[in-house]
Image (cartoon, rainbow, N blue to C red; front, side, top):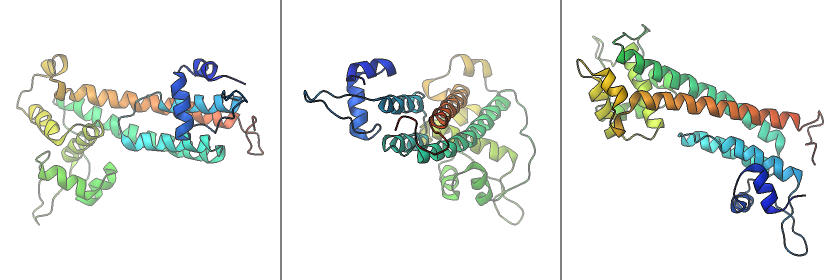
Length: 249
């Protein structure tokens, strides 16, 4: 059994954070002694470690944070089997997001190196949205705001080829990092200059224009989140015997 400060020290957080986690349902209700002091169990320690592992990396995308919180809520409710399923889904989604972030970072590097985009088939807006994991309306909004211009076929239909898909991947990554549409437009306009100074862009970027840095940071953030999620899955799996009940029940 642990006192509030003792368990906080073990996890590396402030005692007030422990109490907040209880209020938010991140850990199970904590019994109190006659003197009204909280007494935490090994199960609470497990729940706190799980929450801190999932929240250790600041994922810039709100959907990622939402998924992590759902795992923590399931753990706080002692529904560890659901927490494990959600963690498996979370890992798969992180991998999917990681692949997109890598594509965006690779696209930016090719832009700086003046390399052409790898060839691919032409797509409709709906197909492009499916590839990016977004909606046609989102892409339409980016077009309306001047972030991208889409060529048309002889029949007048918009055609999304390799260069357009690359640009959309970069826009997607910057929006995930909470860049405004105005900031993205300014950044992309700079990269669209006939002879952008790549060294200047890399060494002395304006605060809103750290395009390569943002892409790389997103890749690193997602890689860290994947490692943490896999650690959580290992924690949940090792704490379950085949009966499905936690060893500290």
